[in-house]
View 1 (cartoon, rainbow, N blue to C red):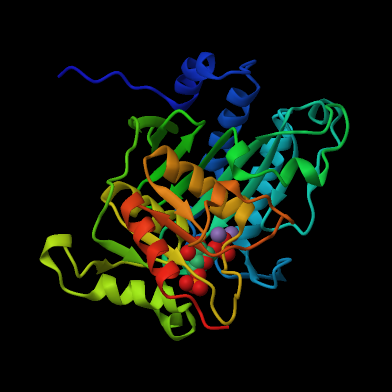
View 2: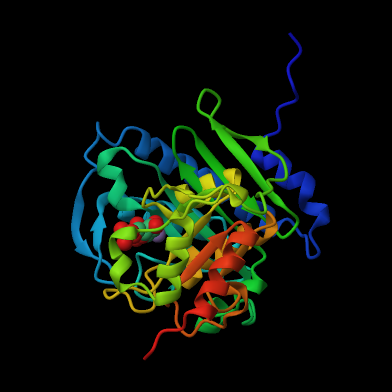
Length: 340
Ligand code: AHG
Ligand code: MN
Ligand code: MN
């Protein structure tokens, strides 16, 4: 039987290099190295019950969250691989207080910085539920040849040159954009290669899934409460009530909603008055992918990609998914302002 031509991630990004305005092969090499690090993390995740990688590392990260052993492993794997690629001069990671600069003179000359959530949804790892990695790449502002500076990382999301995620799910996939559509690659473990599986991923304009941690309902802003009630109401014309689906791994919840159509919300709560998700390495890359697939990403009030970050671990409220659903949630927030 004739086989479709198999295109690997490395081959694909090389082919696309010419479409990229500043292409000198640097970004191509960076993306290639991200794919290699992803395979190491995939290997560890896939045998998590067999090797001593489950549970807490005993540390808390800069945000006071329990750091799992796999958070620390994934952070080291991506950081080492990126800096070794000599195409990345610095990294901002969820698992590191400040920015990490390379002491390799070659890497100091690199033109890109990376923001990364090395392991997203890490509380799910001990119970064999999908986790992910989220990444975002910017061209540095500071001159090459020296350490990167904070301003290199505090650029608005609209300036991302590439972003994506790896989902370690029933299969492992790498999904990325460089601003010319969204592409998905599935890891074929038998040959150890990410192979093109989803050419030009598009999200439906609307859907019938909503994803939110409804346990925090009583502390949500009034507009979000009203929107959730709207999702629950019966209306045949708009396919309501919607189905509630919430995995607790942003990557997995977003991936499903992007393919099927739906909305993901992480509004402000009592514990997290600015929302929980981090702008640089969770919301911006996901927002870039959402827009590139035809969807929308908002704080509920403004476009995520237009925000100028103030610090690397900044949190924002996040509403992302099918464009019409996000717009509807924004309308509810406008219609039902909070009193204080
Ligand atoms: P991380 O594991 O990188 O800290 O991210 C977890 C995030 C996100 O993936 C998920 O959607 C959200 O936290 C879940 O939070 P709740 O448990 O509060 O719903
Ligand atoms: Mn995360
Ligand atoms: Mn994480």
